[in-house]
Length: 221
Ligand SMILES: [Zn+2]
Image (tube, rainbow, N blue to C red; front, top):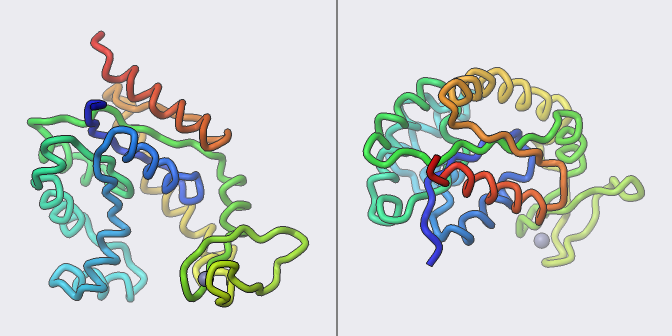
C-alpha cells in the first residue's frame, strides 16, 4: 500500500483543486478534507457550529479563525487522519490559521504545502463559463455558441449560472483570496515548505506534477 500523506492544497477557485484533491485522495488513500464541504454539511445538519456558521455566512462574512480551527482540530484527531493523513482543501486560509495548524500537527507535521497556480485571467474565464444543473448539481461549461439556459443531460433539469458566479462576485472572491493567501504563501515559502505547481496543463499532467512534488518533499535530504 502506498504510504499516506499529510498535504495542504492551495489555489484559486477554478484552478482545478477539487478534481486534483479527489485524485490525490485516491492515490495516497487519505481523506480529502474540504472545509467548504464540512461547513455546508454542518449547516445542513443544523449542528451548533452549523447554526453559528450560517449566521456569519448569511451576513456575507467569512467564518472566523476560531471556528475553522476548532473544526480542523476535531477532524485531525480522528483515527483515519491520525493513521494515514489527509489532504486539506480550504484550510488554512490565513496566517493565524496556519500557526494554529502547526500547533495541531506538531507531532505529525505536514509533508508539503502545494500551491496549484493558475493565472487569475484564466480562472476568471473558467468560472464565468461555469453552469450547474439546478436539480442534480451536474457541472457544465458554457460554450460561446450556447450561453443561454439549457437542459441537463442527466436529469432534464434547468442548467443555469450560479447566482454567485456573476463577474462581480467572481472578481470579489478572487480579490479576497489574493488578499488573504498572499501572506500565507509567504509564510510557507519562508519556511521552505511550499511547492508551487504550474496548474496550466491537462488534469493528468497536473496530477503527475503534484505527486512528483510530494515525492520530492518526502525524499530524505
Ligand atoms: Zn440535472
